Length: 96
Length: 96
Image (cartoon, rainbow over all chains, first blue to last red; front, side, top):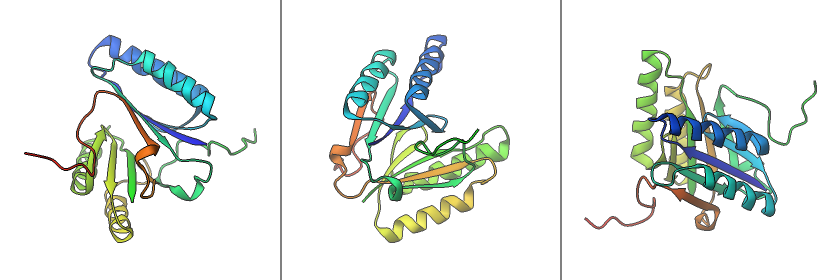
């Protein structure tokens, strides 16, 4: 299923900037960065639970937030993009 | 239906910062800011088309991007939030 992960990390402190880097690094392992703080990940249920747990451990819940949007398997008609594109579709084969 | 709007606006220039403010201002008219660059809007089809057109006119498609995620009417089980909350649910009545 497609899981959209968006995050707001408070980067006013060095600790916050470190959390931001850690969140992004974990998300990169699981999906595609489509915007600065938006990742699209193709995950099964177990992976989704695991990633949520990892990210929750990284953030400071008093000042940061994570949002997960579960778009299911038939997500292609549910997503629309306008403007500059950061990368390839999450399930698209990269020809190198 | 719930339409999730995420945006990346390049703020390296004054013009970019102006575009960012304009995009946010339009989105505020239609929904709730759940994260810095993430809005949740309850829109019908006509409103959705209109807002997309307004936002597309504001951004610079060479350097900015918009993404629209259509989560339908049964979206409550499809959204999960962890951490600090910026506001009330988009369809929640505000008691003042």
